[in-house]
Length: 212
Image (tube, rainbow, N blue to C red; front, top):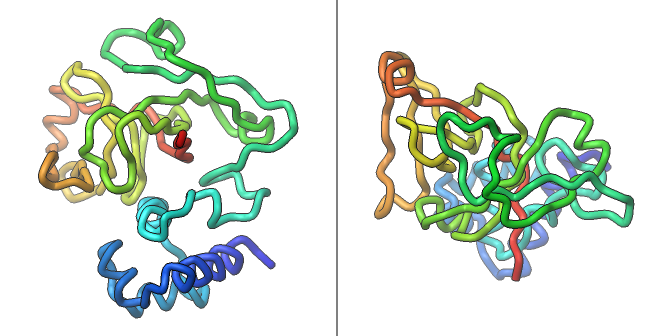
């Protein structure tokens, strides 16, 4: 069974365990019930941010939606020796990531994933990304300077501490979105503001680590 079919089956399985209809799941994650149907039959593949929402709605780890070999979006911990990466408490302007001393812990990623780029981890602060990401959750981040629509990214704005937000590319700029609108309303930055403030993409979130 390929990854897409596996994920489709797992979404359906966990939804039924929750005694939830496709319509109810769709309402929780912000899509129509026929879109959920497409996720479950494999004709429509959910984007990364939707996967996080599905996992939260079904009260499972996002890792539960993938076979253990999946590593480009998420990875489960294995018994193999991993590569340690620092968990940062904050990221600020002017300090290279490798020079930041605000290290609060370490996480491990497997060697296969580590070969795909440079990684760091960041502890989430605040509630702007609830119910997908909660305060003190740890996200695994691949360092990169660009992000596509639908990506959850680490963004540095105006020299302040880096923030975790969903990215939506639009004509003339970029929209940064927090799932908790009561805390953070979507904010649009023009191309000019991106250059002048600046607004910098530091990396893409590829995995959530949540401690019970």
